[in-house]
Image 1 (cartoon, rainbow, N blue to C red):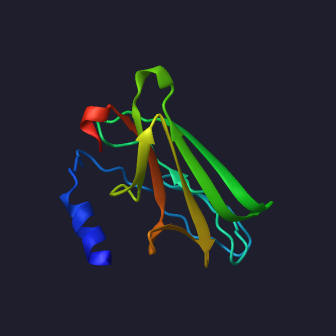
Image 2: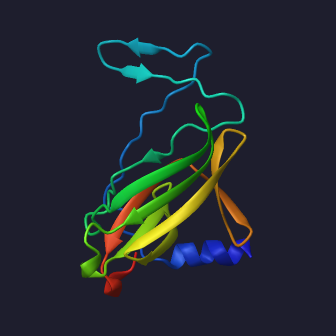
Length: 151
């Protein structure tokens, strides 16, 4: 099943015109901000078993504009355990298809006007599961396209 899923992903059109570099941060036990002349790094302490906010990226795909991105977190304050991410069109009269990508390469789901995907926090990582297959998610994109050119 996973091989079929990966083959389907490989067969999908790819438009990786440019990739955005994401600065990495490493949590410290106390939480701190370090500044030097070339780099500014802010770290946030997240309790064990919890996840921070999902990193949202504007799409690097020049032919797919960004949609309206709305995350809704569950859990307790300071401890996110789940998130429902909705991607929608700014104008539903245009009948655009909203799509959500994970890690800049995985097309997670799409639908006309609005789509929602859910992630769960497992061991400090956001996990997306579909039909029994799971992948760890680091970044999310919300894109729009017309129905004739699905992502």
